[in-house]
Image 1 (cartoon, helix red, strand yellow):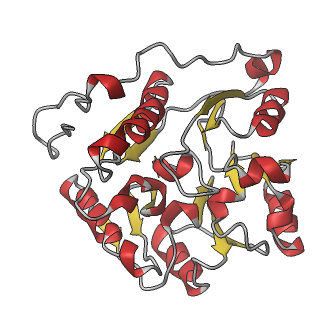
Image 2: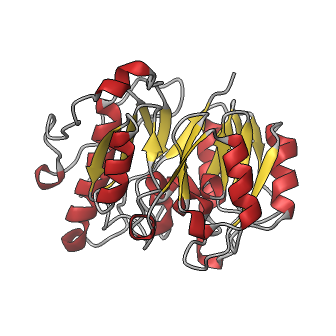
Length: 298
C-alpha cells in the first residue's frame, strides 16, 4: 500500500494521496440531503481548513476498510469546498490518525497536545514539527496535559475546556494565555465521556449540540449562557460518537451510527452526512477525532 503526500511549503503542489483501487472512494458517491426550508433562513457555510493523517499503521490485509473510511471523510470535506492538508504518518505512531487530538490551532497559533499516555506522547512533537515545516512560527509545546482540540475546543471567541481525565486544570490558563482567548471550563462528570469532543459539538457561534448527562450542572449553565441555541442529544447517539462531528455552519459530517442526532440536526435546519468511521476511531469517538480544524477568528 503506497501513499503520496504534499511536499513542504514552497515545493510544487502534489497530487492527492495515491490509493489502491480497492481503497478508492468513487467521487459523487457521498449524497447530501436536500436543503430544508430553514437552510436558506440562516445556516450559511464557511470554508474551513482541516488537517488529516491517513491510517497506514495496519497490516495490508486489515487496512482496506479503515483506509476507505478515512478517504470517505476526506472526499466529503473536499466535496463541501473545504481545504484538507495531509500529515505524513510516522512508523510506530498509529494514533496519529486521530489528528483532532494533536493540537489546538487558532489564528496561526499552534498549541500542541500533551498526552498522559506514554504510548501517544511522541505524536504531539511530530505534529508540531509538521506545523513548523509549513511556516507556523507561533507554537507551544505545553507543560500541562490535554488532548488537543478534543479537550480544548475553540468556539467563536472562546475556548471550551474540558475538566476531565485527560486534561489538567492548569492547562486551561496555559491555553488561554497562549491563544489569547477566554477559557470556559466544562466539568465532565460521566466516566463514559472522557473527552469534551465526545460530549458536545459546536455547530455555530450561537448553536451547540450536547449530551447534558455528561456535564455538571454548572457546566450546563455555562453552555446555556454561551449558546442561545443549545440542542440536547440522547444518550445512545452520544455514546455512538455522534457528537464527535465536524460542522461548517451548515453541513454536519458525523458517524452514521447516530440517526437520532442526524434527525435532530435536520429539524433545526442543518444538512447532515453520515459516514462509517468504525474502523478509524476508538469507542465513543467519531469524525472530528480524525480531523484537526485550523481556526481563523481574525
